[in-house]
Amino acid sequence: MVRVLVPSGALGLNYDKQALARGVAAKPDIIAIDGGSTDSGPSYLGRGVSKYARSSTKIEWAGLMEARAQAGCPLVIGTAGTCGTDSAVDWMLDITREIAAEQGRPVKIAVLRSSQEPATIAQAYAARRVTPLPNAPEINAELIESCTNIVALAGVEQITQALDTGADIIIAGRTTDTAIIAALPLQKGCHPGGAWHGAKIGECGALCATNPQSGVILIDFDSDGFTVTPLADGAHATPHTVSAHMLYENSDPFILYEPGGHLDVTGATYTALDETSVRVTGSEWVVSDDYTVKLEGARGAGFQTVLMALIRDAHYVEHSERWAADIVSKCTAKVMDRLGVDEDAFTIEIRIIGKTASFGALETNHAAPPEVGAIGIVTAKTESLSQEIGKMLNPYLLHHPLTVEEEVPTFAFLFSPAEMPRGQTYEFALNHVLHLDDPMAAFSLEVHDCA
Image 1 (cartoon, rainbow, N blue to C red):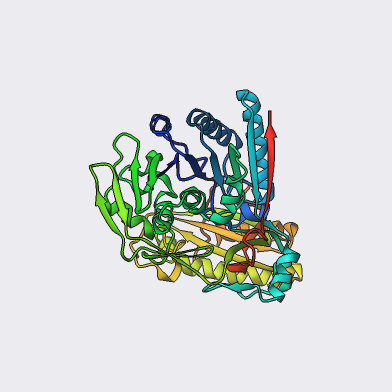
Image 2: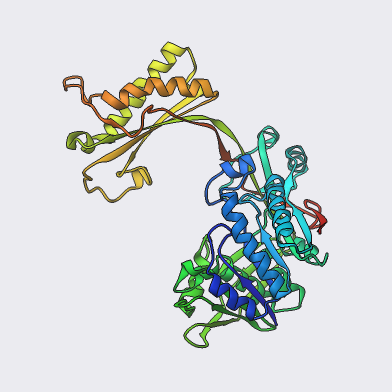
């Protein structure tokens, strides 16, 4: 049996210290935690930085490093620093060294890097070793080389290589959420389907339990399947909460694709062992003929300035979309006329918060709110152009009448000055896989001894 302790869904979300202590007392074989994902958009990948505060990250990581020492087992983090770029890995390595010095405890650290050189990926694309996933955008060599950061998602093969170094702590760049949990059970000969399925269930900590924010869970893997046990007070796993997690960030509730194959849980059986633990068997791992890793890339998408106005006049609330469309049309024409720029050099968008900002034309709830927010978004090729257009948009959001016959209205800006420069923005550019003959070909591994 292999026992994996998962403290939380991600480092930075905090964890229940009492529950963590229970997990350490249960003598886990490894402590595994995710460092982030693409949930918060492309900027973190584009810039190669973490979304979490360094101070909070250090406090939580110090607690896990202490737990690792008490348990006498490896500690692994995947997708370090939210995005898993080399710069984010170095950020996490610096924090780890700092803590090790403060705790006065020597540690051996394995660092798995996932960053890719855009030129190298462009060459792989030309050699037809980069292929699209469903609904992937059209790409070419120029687009690939415009990416500020590209990462490949490591699987269990790469994490296993890191485990083989005998490191106390493994800091991994971008990985699949499941790889850091499934690697040791697979290495020790546990049931393949159970290893991958249990890893999927445990990827977000106690999200698979009735007290999802409590964080800490324990997963026992063996030759037939796995057992999941949440450790916080008031947290219970049930067949429903466990089976439902296959739907989390996954379009198919029965199939999950990973490097080297896919998980099929069609035949899985979920059994409540008591009020807390659930036993799962019958999952199947299907090996693929081709080994691929997913690529994620982000590139600059222009400079942005935003403005926010509040509207409470019932007439304008009711007709806010028409009002916004008229502003966009008029301000766009004004910018082109006065600044002498082409339409492809900028965009002006106004989203009506409280009505259709989330779903646009797909919105089905049309109840009239008492007020709405209008957020103007200007995106342009340069920062100066973005800010100049933002100032041209300003009077429209403050005073623009719905029709020429109406009196000039006055709305309320949320801040003064109204224009808020956001600087460089980013967009995701890749939804593709890289075909590898050797799983380690796109990754590098190094070991550091910290006294």
